[in-house]
Length: 366
Image (cartoon, rainbow, N blue to C red):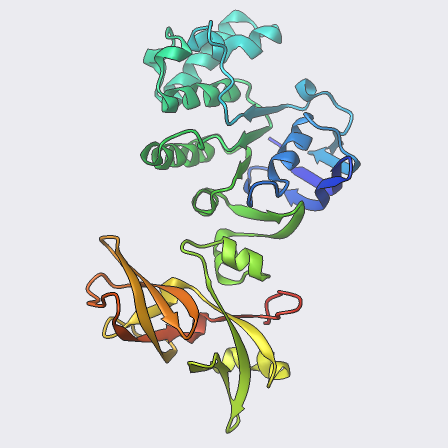
């Protein structure tokens, strides 16, 4: 097992900067997830660590060793690819054993590792099959098994679930989390799916245009995003954003969006005093908007009226697509809510969980 450090790492492809001055320390035994939209630099960051791309500047350390010039085979890492990359002419057993055979590991040790990994992944009965005889989920387990038998210091996983259907993805996600807990090894995982990131990672690194936006625990990213991008990317459905103004009425601050005026709790008011009379971006998550009478106790209530545009019944909840003035937004409400398209509804906003951002810098105000 080993820690991993990106020390001011930059990667350029010609005029394009894929990774820009990445600084992050990943603790020994941590499960870190790189997340972000396509082209944000997350896979390139992983490939730099694996040695599949050369660093333009900076250093990567595995443990205390700088590995910039160390060949991939000598970095003591194992990588699981999006495409599985199994040898079609080999059995499952031989696919899992192939890397160990190349390293001249004794036959008895290979057999022990392969059978242990197969038992761990529940594929003992598939060892004699060829990849074409396997389902997508089984192939993914074989690819994981091939990485496990290496007993590496660091596991690298590049969108390993993206080729699976939705149900199998959820199931395999849980299996990966259990595998991480069992092995206790450093895992570095790349995905564009923020639900995968939130449910699996001990910490998440959010990237955009090659730049690290924020790295923190899933809960902290959700509750205290550093900027608008992180706030909008983490959470599903994503946070609602409104152009608004901070106004002072009889010594109390309100956020004024034209069609609504909502009181600001005292714990948030101090940070917003410099913005009196100025524009801000007001953010509120769909799950912090409630329909009467299904309002939980203990929240800071603010009333907002809106017109229902579309409703989506999800079984355990309803998504209301709403309009206030010309601004559309989403509320995630109790399934007993009787609202229908065309209705005007009175909503309760939990201002304890409101977010405010500077419109120029897009940074959180707090």
